[in-house]
Length: 518
Image (tube, rainbow, N blue to C red; front, top):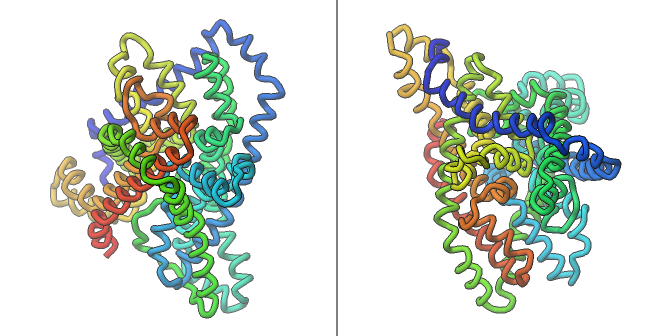
């Protein structure tokens, strides 16, 4: 779109509001601790060898998750984006489900599995268990990133390689080098998401860096130490982002379509049956088995626990869905603004700001928002759902920006230039041309952010106002002392509600996306 639209006051206002409500609280929190906290010196002394050892252990767990997720995601991405696999569109959609399910749901399911079949949970309630659960959750993200990169390879490069060599050499000397930045992007993002994730290690009762920060803040009320520990984790995440900043910021994952791609599809002959078995096994292990196990555990002793779980969760449905709806809508508005600015190369800092905030662990984000808004002047935000919405906005606007930004890039600039020649004003070009053309990606961004907001735990558990009813919080707080059947039933209900919403929204969006792709 035209450069004159860059000065649109509404878009500028959205940018400034995000800076005020999200960025300033983060900066304020760390400045207040580093420069104005009387206990700063004493807390610095507590950053001892045990702290760095815990950070190293957490990093090793996340490194392992990132490695296995990227390897598995690359295999899945190649089969589903570069071959003529049967049912590949079905697998593309269904294999994404773990990415949209709150992590603690899969943690409960796998703990139930080991209790049901092995009568012990020692293996899964360990760092190995965290690696297995996180890998199943984040592999779909790697599949998206690597698959999008594979789809963007010009087929002429591969055809030229086949003239002089065989597939193995083309794979290792042409394809993999061309997607190396996508592989690094996948590794870094999964690492950051894994080391920032709170609910799985907390449910398994394991001590990692995020649970230690949460304990210092909520149990010992040592806010300064929690923030200092947070600074170490944020520094690690930002250093990783800076190492691949250009490619992460420009990564074309989470696209609604593949318009304009000229990719080569490899034909699978006898191998397609082996590939189909591999994909089916992965789908069974990552999606079907957890769901079946939750059903078995929920109804093993009858329906009483399931009915009790439903009665406990029923009051949370309205507020949870309403919050998720509002959070998704706000995230799409902010994401559109950042994507628009980035596409016009007028304010790429906004895109980068969203990426940095996205990389900040949920517990740390929650601490910062609490420290800033827990003041008399901001009591109207702190005491209500507004602070939770700000948390959702901070966590998920980057996702919207990526989806919408990828869509805007696919629109020929000649359309806007033609509109300018016809004398169509800035406002009309924005609202009557650009937005209708990217409506399906806007809707897809809304769906994805709605699902993420509905299942978000790390930010919500820090920010939810006392006395409020939020589904993810109620499940997590009750499961610590509830009978196994009740925990499984509550988790099954959340799982089922999420799947129903995913299915319903997908069916609603399918006609729009189909028309958009055509």
